[in-house]
Length: 222
Image 1 (cartoon, rainbow, N blue to C red):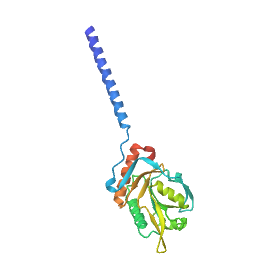
Image 2: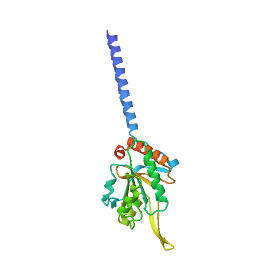
Image 3: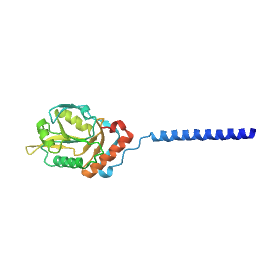
């Protein structure tokens, strides 16, 4: 009888040790899984993702409707932003057309982003002019104009620059050619360098969104 009791106690002890081991092992795995995965490596398609998103400069500007907007207006949605101007003869129309094609091929299951033209020539880019220009590309296309120094600071916070110079009496506007991807917290999460390809842009957006959803849930919601 004593031997039977001892055997039962030993078996119970083994069961307790086994359960304890499983619980500890599960906790170790969970702690390991809490470590965020690194951002996707997308340099082959000219996309560079920040592990920690970067805040944009504070601003108060006008959109294409003539409404005052601020940095908070970028929250709650994904946005492809681009510095350019409506009189741009080549780079801007090509870039906007590429974004329009990207918009059309994005899978429906992904959050549908907006596309934002930040004016490098606010002297000529009035809200009405922006409205006529971006409206040609689609309902998801918008523009920002206003104080030139505010626009310049916003561009710098997106790793972009623009400048004006006179050549043979003609005023030229020069500006960066990359796209900036802004997450729903209104922060820069990636830079997409030219040459731009709609398929590559769509793939980069998908991978960045899925990575952000898994590792930064707040910053991926829209």
